[in-house]
Length: 421
Image 1 (cartoon, rainbow, N blue to C red):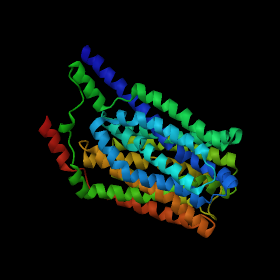
Image 2: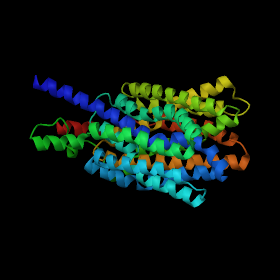
Image 3: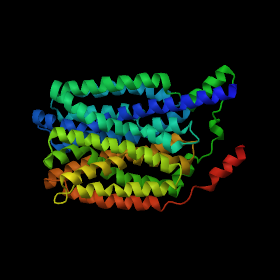
Image 4: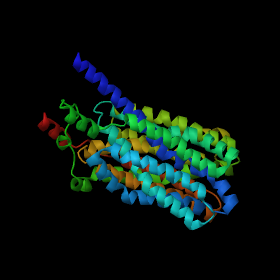
């Protein structure tokens, strides 16, 4: 009877952790989802160019990529909870601070650099490590639910931010997005975010046997071995290429739609439509990752993202095709992080997952910084997004092919598991 109670308690703890992690990841995504909606009011008030508006988040993501491995090491040692809780509070303050923007280009960049430093504590590494560390079965589904937070953010933030800007102005919108979303995130993580580190520590204090495996017995590559692993390099390169393109599209999607003649209100709701498709994509991808070869699932999904770029090109796009593009882009959008996390755990193991995945997340952050800046520079240089959309259509297909050709999982994982039985 006591064993059944323990299993039920573990099941409840695991899935409430997923809930907290999902909301946490949605909070990290708030600024990415909302920034495009602030382009117009900031340009009207301060005359900011789209290159400048894009450079802030680009520099923040680049900084996140540089310091990400340090936080990955902290997560490996102390667990996600001790990194995330103070990080949420600092991120709330950082987002609210954007309300003090006064037209200074230097200040705009500094605000984003501060955001990049504090928000790295609540980026994908924290949530992915927490979830993958406690799930042995249904990993793909659990990770898909966790990363659905980005899609929830995409669904809600567009209409919400547009409403806040319209009703109370862009300054108050930054404050409410930070305090409102961040406050909910903090409460959920305070009560439910207990990963393998926390459970092992609690079991040690109580003198009970824990289902959590000692980290020293977990299978996995060392940091040096991971650096030489060709499969991990290919995962990183594929994801980097696709992330540069899709994150550039994500940040500029709202102005792309309005430039195509879509009203601000309809464009905001179209972003929400993409978010709904994103939730579907993460759940379906999670189900498929648990049952079929993940590199094939990932490669086909990333390659299909190129269709969204193609359908948004001038001369091809139409109201119907724009809706299809939003559905395709939304479906594929968040799966990049999900697929990368799953493949990193499969090829690199969990022993040093925080360090290894933080490098992957660093590549994603760097790509997230480069992509919007490239898209903004192309628009300012050519007066439209056509060259960027063409690059996206081709690049996503190439990235998908690179992932499809990945080898089978390494034999060392099975050997170490046998050795620890």
